[in-house]
Image 1 (cartoon, rainbow, N blue to C red):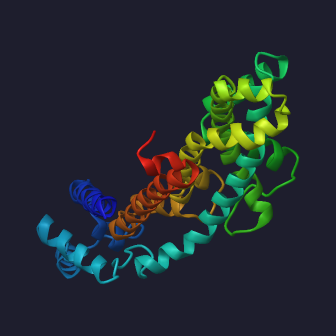
Image 2 (image 1 turned 180 degrees about the vertical axis):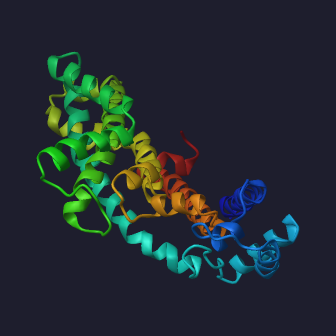
Image 3 (image 1 turned 45 degrees about the horizontal axis):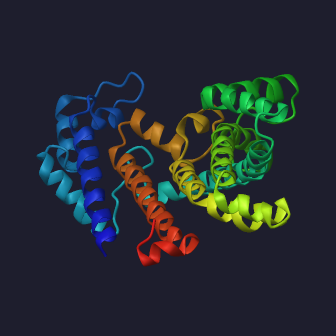
Length: 307
């Protein structure tokens, strides 16, 4: 109950801050809606539309109206899409979910075996090679990785389409690989660090002295104890991906929540932007709550007040 109360207070703080930033941001959403192309809209029409939309009200009035709508399940109407915010966001959820799921599967399939391998063969050639490439992967921005993949596999080799627009397997490969490269580079190093920390503990030395095979020690003792910090990194990666990786989605024209949020900012579509912020903040806090709960399952000592 204490954690749930903290979540509610945090959500209120996030929404107040975001709503305040949109309130003082330069640009007028009414002008963005009415002035199409070279059309000149009379000032009295702009003022009338602003009154009809309630944008002439003080900050606290607008925020209270938005908050009461949220409590009743109404997130408002998107200025640019001319449809409810919930319906507009639901159009981007499948794309983001598909991209996040595929990226996480590739990340786990690559990072966990590689991290264990280079931890066991510490300071060998394979360790230096994998760490070198993981360092490069962490250092490169995700949009640069995406552009390189688009150039070589899309433009030069023609193996995959270079423009998105719909959720399909062939269009999902390159953006998934882009995110997986960035995430795997970080996750591989974390797996190595966690496994190395467990390899140096006394219980591993004792198990080796009793003649227990290294494979059994690894799967039954080292990995269960090493998974706690990895669960935290995995959970934050899930929240990061489900929030919508805007840059990657824009590079590949992927129909997800991140690209939707960028367009909402460009169009001054503040109700849609507030819906996105509420979505990502809620997901982050729910995932953090699930991570904390998983600690008690993975480490029963915490139930008895241990560390």
